[in-house]
Image 1 (cartoon, helix red, strand yellow):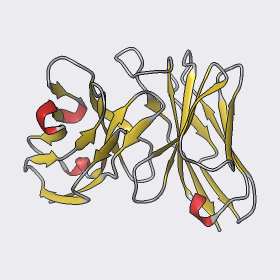
Image 2 (cartoon, one colour):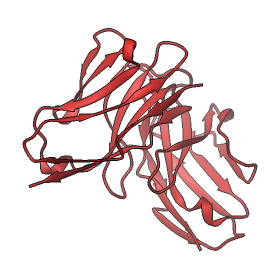
Image 3 (spheres, chains in turn green, yellow):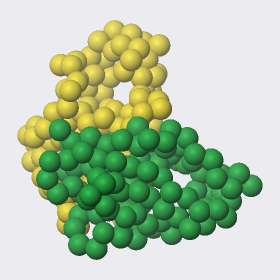
Length: 111
Length: 117
């Protein structure tokens, strides 16, 4: 069965510092992987996605993620965090419709 | 271009009541999926509809039902509401069913916040 684990419930970083959010997945076939961001009271905005090909994918807002099949991971990174990046981040795997989400990582940005 | 729209934005109900949530997909999209997001958790898949037929169902009780109309809009119905049904209900649309791809990306609406008292 497909599943996603986000080991960090809450992360705090200083503005301007680098960021890495962890995501581990379990999936029987070639995974389709996604990162979404959700601001308070809002829907989900797609940051980036991996379907195939280059394992380093670039997304919006300066985010990138690297697919590592050997580690079953798809970690999200940003070299310099901005205060506006404070939000909830969700990793997801699977097909349209039956998409499995992790529990999320809440990001707090310190001034 | 209009994205996925959902109505109402917020809703307050009492236990035992029934609720109907509505979703309009992006123009041209034929697949609509529903997700429940309880506070502090990730979204959980409820249903997928494609071409007006149910194509997938998550692990939710029969109190939850949905349908899709000829214009591809969709309704999610929940009967006999429980306190635990309080959540953000998200609708997502895509061009087709099946595996996601650069062609078949899923887009989410802003959600309906349901509070059950």
